[in-house]
Structures are given as C-alpha cells and as structure tokens.
Length: 131
Image 1 (cartoon, rainbow, N blue to C red):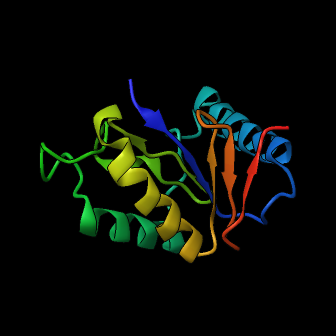
Image 2: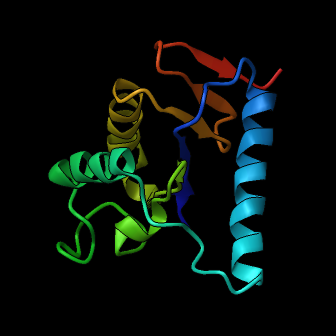
C-alpha cells in the first residue's frame, strides 16, 4: 500500500468535487484503453510529464535506481501519462516527499489531487478541500 496522488495537466477545476470528476474520467479513459487491448495503463508521457518525472527523481530517485527511494513502485515513469501522473509514495516518507511533489507540480502549472487528505492543490498556491 502507498500514498498515491494524482498530478494533472489539464485546466484547473474550480472545486475539489470537479477535480474528482476529472480524475475519474481520466482513469476511466485509461481503463477503457487497457480493456480494449489498446495499450498499457498510461499513454506515453508528455514532454511536460517527463520533465516533472525528471525533477522529482533528481531529488528522490526511482526505486529502480535506489532501493531506499521513497516511491512505492518502479519504474516510476510508468505512472506518468499524457495528462495525468499517479505516483505512489511509501507511507513512511509522505511527510518528507509530498510537499516537494506538490510544490514542484504546482510550479510547473499542474494541479494535485490528494484524495486521501481531501485536498486539491492548485498552481496559484491555493488549496481547496472537500465541502
């Protein structure tokens, strides 16, 4: 088990609830692709998602490169797609890694849905919560 968040590269929603719907739609599209035999869970990552991966692993290497890394699975890049990334963090490292992940994603213009904390972190620095 791990602490997973969604990092999303589409227009930021106005509410936490809207973010849930967007992530559900992206997950449904991904799952439909798998079920149809059209490919893996994620499409190849976009250039911006590859850059996010690079920035995250520059500080916290993938567990394929460092078994002590904070990520729950690897290769980490397999969790990055065109519009959404869903990296998992080992629970013992969440307090250390999650703030960096959110700050890095927001700095790049992405929003982060943390469903476990019921928080939506927007690129403008604001955080929306479940109502």
